[in-house]
Length: 107
Image (tube, rainbow, N blue to C red; front, side, top):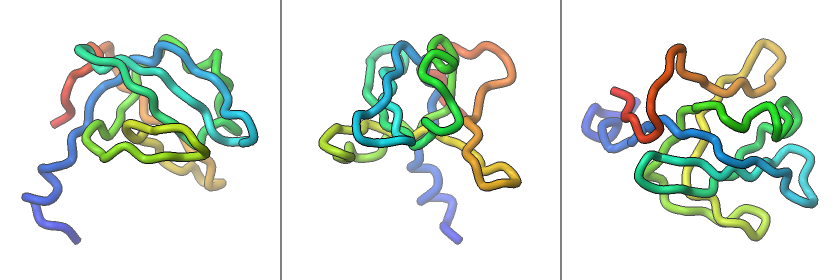
């Protein structure tokens, strides 16, 4: 359990996916270039077994936008894609039900 003050520090935003490519040497990592409205970022996500790059371009997703950047396989990831695990343990990316502009905060 975390207290509310700790949770309130997590910044969840809508990100529009601009480009997606596979990370060389990994079966599951995808490199996403996303728009957060006022800025673009690169985020790496381990969803490449369930999603093809072309199936994600143009979609809006939910990301944690205030994580410290992290190096993964020599590439910088500047956020985290939110995904749930289905019954078989495979990730399912969280997509907004209706259109929301990139950069929109979740509350």
